[in-house]
Length: 158
Image (cartoon, rainbow, N blue to C red; front, top):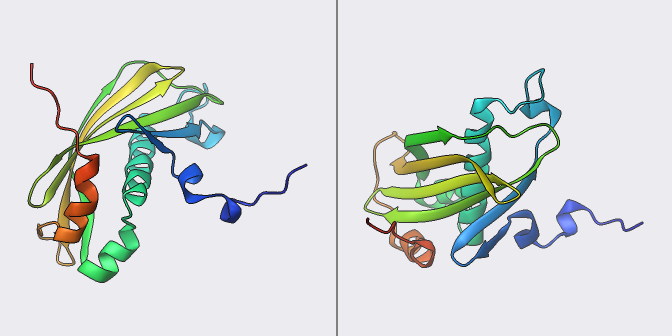
């Protein structure tokens, strides 16, 4: 038996991976994620998407606690559209796929989908705002923008 603790795993394994510009973050559906019928609660998908966005930021070299401590800003959800297509169920292995689609003064846009075996179950369009300690919009600092720019893939029109 291999004894490999989470702290010994390379960070990229815990944070998922980027494949062709898209972040893939696997997770298992646990009992706590579901209702009595074994169906995932609708709000849990928002939590799964949040976790995946955080790990994509981590792969870009951005830790949110350090962002807050060094720049006095945090990312807060400004807008979220969710399209529930099919339910995930207890014990399913799903993957959150994320792309940052827009980087503006104080905004970061993302397109996310939660898939099971390649089938899209949920699609989310998310806009997060960079806000300061007072909760007011704050321009994303240049070093953070520079770290994010390689991960931005604008949505194709049409």
